[in-house]
Length: 176
Image (tube, rainbow, N blue to C red):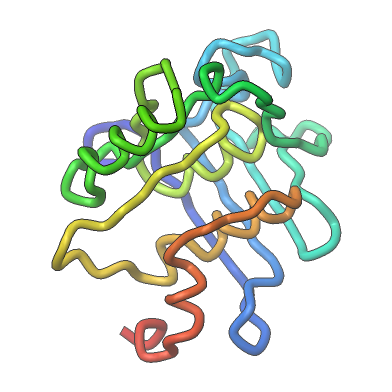
């Protein structure tokens, strides 16, 4: 946010410890893909709103109020064609481990580094196929940093293998 890069205003509703609704407003995220595919917009409009509810899918619309469109992740059959996202801030994730995993998967593209939960919105509409995040020792994840984004991605029925399940199962983290 301070650098003028990506940021998100994120709201999530938890019911009995499970995320059931999420909304992400991403004022600096282009309506068009951040990795070159312009399937959602042919102009340079900036500002996206993503919303998802359990069982209802994920939708995106411009912040200027266009009609929402249902979004879906990229269907990649060959991992060499996949792009992967990781945190912009090196302190938030173990980039060496992410690089090693991407290499083992055969991913050829360099990582797309993006701030905030905006990366979840970008993933939900197919801008990338993989989000790798492995916190460095001593970094403590917070539920509010991932809850809204997690349902925006899982609302489109992909598996999110990640620290969120741990956070949700340890209520003490939610109170911090």
